[in-house]
Length: 386
Image (cartoon, helix red, strand yellow):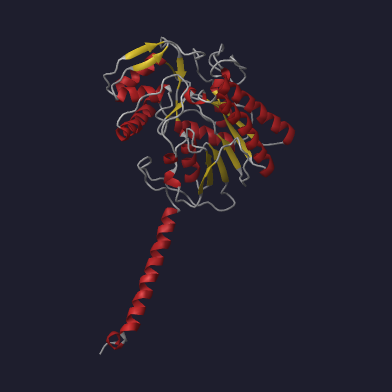
């Protein structure tokens, strides 16, 4: 008779239970190791992003304010893939939880719902301060709140950086140049800004934020970086942000009229979001602490850009011209000689290649929503939610 036949039934069952438990534990460990090595595919971000495991001496704890927004979520992807610990802080006014939900399971990721105009106590090594609505309809919806975000929010982040001795990078903007009289715009240009216009809550808020950055640097020896970001586009743009790229694509995909405010002769320069993220990380980890333009110097008239998007989407839309928006800049093009010299950075993604990726993203957004009504130039609260 075999040993198993001689073994009492209770003992056999107990042995089997132990084996089952050990197998389950081994599977749990294996699952946790997998979850700690990559993102989870989601409808919003189906691509799996692998993460590396850094030794403690190299792994940084990094705070991204506005990290659930368009640019912030792409920056989160980059830093997570490099093996750092990332803390995303967002009040979800324009940010969306769907932009970062593929990281919610990961042990290196934390998400905090918080408004930067309120202080917060954290221990971090670096701060990317991106929090602030960036599209005119959104930042004009509550101009006082926009000013508070740029001033009180920046003061709070600078105070945090001072306390924990973290380096802080401010996401400033090409809007500080206003309607420029110098073309292209170098960092040495002081700008031409209407302090009383509808865009001034954002323009002047960012200008004073830069001033505060240098005040903390000079008075408190805070390590600072300032990126002056020009027009950026790519997947995860808010579908109702009212910007040129998102509006033109959404209108074209739905064969609705493509609306241009003005005669379309005004120019813009557009960079793909991956190039911007490269520039931000190079700036943060480099040694240059004066302002740096990050943008693509390829310049397009708004009319030509609308025509290009119409062609790419094979749309039957018609281009309609409406009255010009107040204080809309007539031209915008970055001088990126500083970024080339100090950061060894320049855009790598051609605008047309970036547009194709962005169009594919918005096809999914339109299909999921059924219909998206583009946002006009007037102040409006962001649609959708976290």
